[in-house]
Length: 83
Image (cartoon, rainbow, N blue to C red):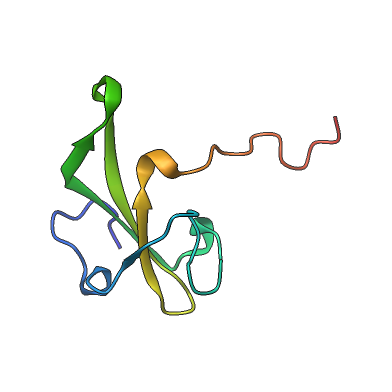
């Protein structure tokens, strides 16, 4: 699946807004989603003219959810390090 398709896939239609950036049903992280689509056609501008997009996730439990790109937690680049 192409995350940048111009039209939304059908599974995005029942998506609910997740405020914790994980599946609101089973709490799986976004990285374990079986499909992702980013709505790049309608950015929202926040303070400081920063853009954010709706990121849609289709969880393996069957739940479709979305969150703002600006709410995505930072990547843990030190995962697995002992120091």
